[in-house]
Image (tube, rainbow, N blue to C red):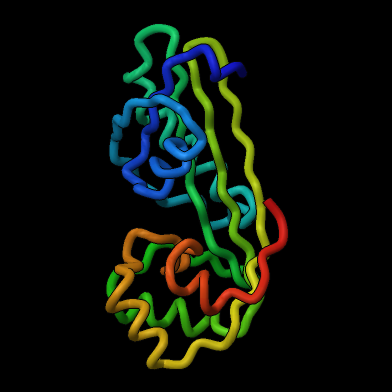
Amino acid sequence: MDILNKKIILASQSPRRRQLLEQAGFTFEIKTKPIDESFPADMPVNDVAPFLARQKAHAAREFLTGDEVLLTADSVVILGDTIYNKPEDAEDARRILRALSGQVHRVITGVCLLSKEKERVFYGESRVHFAELSDAEIDYYIRTCQPFDKAGAYAIQEWIGLCKIDRIEGT
């Protein structure tokens, strides 16, 4: 799908996705539509992020009026067979960050590009190697970086990425 010659509609409230598109030099408009972010309990963990990205695109398809392309994405953090989405509160963020501390986990980001003519869904996967996090470091991160809108309770471009991620492999 050629998005370079189309108007892009970003159907996301994520400041990180907006920043990525701006840094890449794209011109776009932001329009969002809330969705239920639940998924079938028996869905393989690798399929969750692409499924949610597609659900977001289909919920926002009414914004397509002509020659636009709608862009949606969703990220999930996976440790073993457990998916860590956005934390509900500080205690949930603490629980998630303790689980990820000293572990290697996967981050899968699903993307959906939708136009009136086509749909393309794909994903990228990274393996993130976390250093050990002390309770004081976890509390500092929760207090200063507001992890409540972030899958896995963290963003790689914040303090935790600079100080507590040893290595990233993948896309």
